[in-house]
Image (cartoon, rainbow, N blue to C red; front, side, top):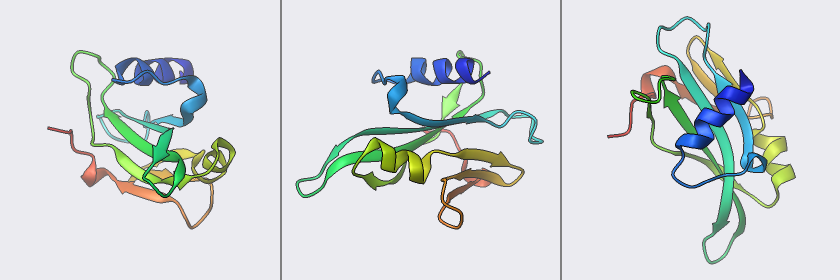
Length: 121
């Protein structure tokens, strides 16, 4: 299931990412909704003139069917210096009945409530 989810997420992305860019993948199967959500947490190179490193981002996919699948806007989680730091801070994604929690540090997770899971126009 993880292989299918990773393949589906990476195949849809406009820019090709390697598996090394992925920090976490989680599908909401069995959490209680009829709609299936997929979370993809990944890193991309970042440079804003002052800071150079990796931008940690989240994209949530709505549905699994490629013909009807939609996704939310990209969520910016933070900027880190290394892939190891990104993994230690953001390498966990878990669905619950009320939404998605991303983060490996208890108390510092990013929470995205299900009410905010709307498709990007």
